Length: 124
Image 1 (cartoon, rainbow, N blue to C red):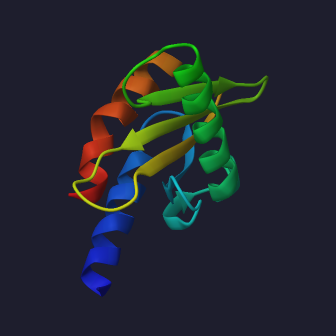
Image 2 (image 1 turned 120 degrees about the vertical axis):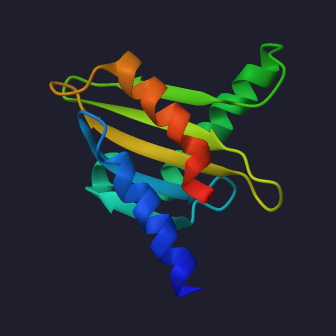
């Protein structure tokens, strides 16, 4: 168990290398339980809040006729960006990767692509 926790922590720590990323958290998309975090966790966002936000967006997209699963969400404020990514796994509840970014140091498009590309590696 300790080895898997270390591998998860290493994967999350690696996400902090992306320019402007200040914190990341891996969250159970149903319960909001945080499985692991790196950097400034408050910047990544609270697990239950990320879970509720993703559920609200999925609900609204479904009501609007969108099909398929949520892939990612980008929220922007004056000082930071917050990104949520769906993490696909073969069994169990779906996961979310929440990331907080410093708006002055991050390029949203590059961060979205970089973090999106690395989402699959978080559970590897």
